[in-house]
Length: 106
Length: 119
Image (cartoon, rainbow over the protein chains, first blue to last red):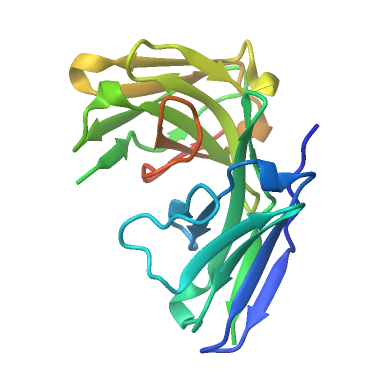
């Protein structure tokens, strides 16, 4: 079965750029979506179809997808970006989520 | 604005059933689907299934087939998820989320409904 692999945690210095990856076999051929989840809150969609931002999501957050890796990039990281981030695909009549990455802003 | 409001927390005995509601507002209910996603304590997200707001067609996660039923009530713009034969490992927060004609991406999400099944 298809699997999505994310690093357990990523740390970034305040104001620097964070990169969170989502690995999967030929994931570049699929549409990848990303969610941000803060403690005690419901997830929020931050990127859909690889690189599109919903309204209200800042331009600092961007996505890309190619080959075997999809990437979520957060530039000028802020304390408010600390959260869990999940990637997701719709594949073969099922929805798959990555295991999630905890982003820590130092 | 688009909003999904879910029913309140539940505590159920093993073997019982739970039914969670999700009331939609701010958009045409029949133009979208609703997906259900659960999250066990300290764990990741698990998709449970999807239902069309247009015609009630469903797609369920394979591991929940036979235990889960999703329905809609279009005149109240409400979706329901019923899970039967509850076990302790069904303890989780259950979310509904708006989807498209397929469960492609989810936006927005409901606030979540905690369901506890004591062991």
